[in-house]
Image (cartoon, rainbow over all chains, first blue to last red; front, side):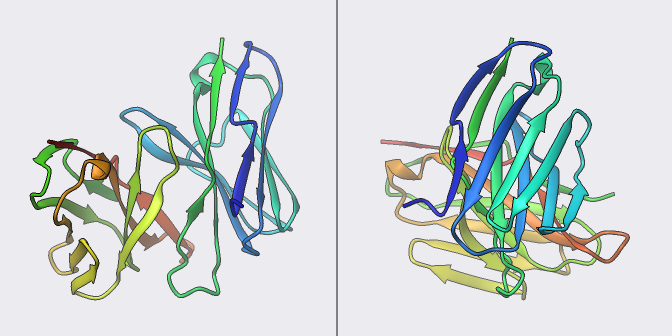
Length: 114
Length: 113
């Protein structure tokens, strides 16, 4: 079973719609992250959370919001989707207790905003 | 500023050796990661260097020189399945002394028969 799961895996929506992408993990990690990846722009951090009561903006948080419902769950919302939010979205987790604090990624959600 | 540079694309032949370079300029260096990402899939962790020198892990090795701000990933005995993007990421400190991960844009490696 995958340690980091994302739902949905693919989503097509229309401009102006509100959508939520969900991430769950069974790794027991405290830290969770949302990235988007666009061709030529690489991975860009949207939001991150170091524990349930902690939410931090990344480099491109405008137009997005997040909720850390539990240690294992971290959701990303697009309040009013726009076409330039079309991208591949990844959730990741890491464990500060581990010396490396390696980030482990979910399988990704491919989002198309029409 | 903080930035990471790596070549955009590389090609190599099956069975050969390829070296993918990464140079970085960051504050408060705290480790360098290499990830592999197949098209449309998630990045997966390959290696980590925090001290100078070579780390070997099977067919893959990673080298770090902190004084030069330089790392490379060496792939030996290339296989077709090694065709992927290779991402270099550096962990540094931000203004609040919190660690953050800075990602390169990735090097797309094509392995030809």
